[in-house]
Each structure stands twice: as structure tokens, then as C-alpha cells.
Length: 213
Image: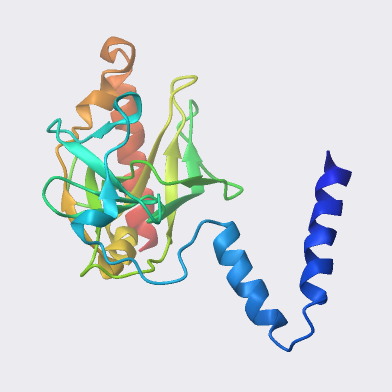
């Protein structure tokens, strides 16, 4: 399979090299965008640029309203309030983690793409999460890398947190608003029997992340 794919790539390059013009780099740039399903022109974010998926793939927000997907770039979604979400708005890079031994350790920098990020404020007891939305219909949009802490306790459960100061990098590029998600749902894992231990680790993380700032 690897040889087949390599030969197919060589065939494409051979075809491009026979065109006999000076626009090779231009063609490569356009081909790269199209092959990654990235539009050549800006999205309009108008209503007719979005569509609902079929029933079995339909997406809903916390209020059970349908989320519609952009026809030209599937990473963009139109919410019922008219705001636009971008699937690749954040990357969570794990800088530290804490486990059973209650000791914060440096991580190798493993990355998680998209998904929920819990933001821990210095004056709050529990983290909150945010809706992240495109600002002023801007396109294309940056992916913001956040240095985060990971709690790995108990076994086969984890949650990722970042400081409010680190989340400011997202606030600079996107519209953000605290959403309806409640961290208590995380604390209810296995009937909530680990709640006190998880909160202890959150407090240790908060002390560490704000001492560094």
C-alpha cells in the first residue's frame, strides 16, 4: 500500500512537471489547498452556505437546536443563535499532569485537537468551559495552542485544564462565552466517589499554574 501511494504521488508530480510553464509553485499551493478540502476563496458565512446533516449524523447544541455544517469547509458550524464555531479553534498541549501520587510532573507535550477545554480561574473553586466562536465572520482562522494540565485520576479517567491567563490567547482571536456545561458532570464519574480526590488535585494544579504566572 505504501509503494502504491508513493507511485501515485510521483505520477501527480510527473503530470504537473509536463505543463511547461513557470507556475509550478502556484499549482502546488492550489493543489495542496484543494486536496485538503480547503476552499480557494473566503467563506461568506451566509445562511445558504450551511446545511443540516442527515438525521443519523445531525448535530445538536445543549438546547437541542440543530447545528448546521458549512458546505464548503466542513470544519465550520452555524449555531441556532447565528454564531459560528470552528472545529480546529484550539489544540490542547499537555505541559503538566498529576496522577495518583498527587505530584505535578512535566509532560512530553502530547496534543489533543478540539473538544472541551476547562478553564480554571485563580479565584474559582471549579473550572468552567466556554463556547468559542468566530469573530466578525473572519476567515481563515488560527488554531490556538494552549499549554494545559491533565488530571489522570482515577484510572481510565482524565480531564484537561488551562489557566484563565493561558485562555486569553483564545479571547484575543475569538468570541468566547461561558457555556452551560457544569463541571459537576465530570465529578460524578463512577457515582461521584472520586469527587474529593479530584478537587484536591484541581487545587494543587491551581496553586502550581498561578505560582508560575
